Length: 120
Image (cartoon, rainbow, N blue to C red; front, side, top):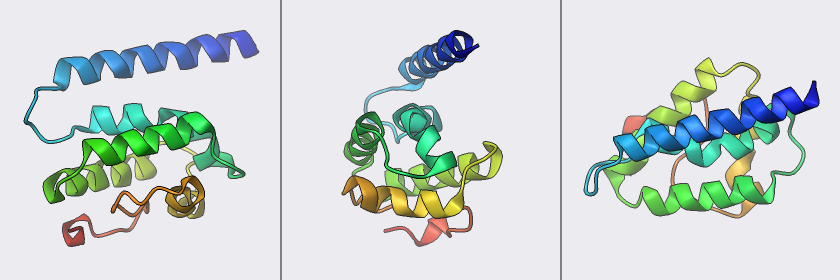
């Protein structure tokens, strides 16, 4: 059973990576597929809490690098908000604490209720 879950997780990562490659064009704003790809390693933490993995914090750093401008941060915010509201089991308190636990300020709050238009 654990092997099936591992294979499913691996396939999800491969599919998200492929979507990101297909959707990415240099000079365009960040996409939700990119945001999702960066944060897939954080799902366990977002659901259960504890300490985020090194891969999770690395993804958060990659997200920060991929969203340097206001428009990118607002788009990332919308993607995070949407995922928080649609992916089952994500704990809003864990989401809010993730940047601090990783020591990464990406300028985008993780919350189901954030006003993404207020992001600078």
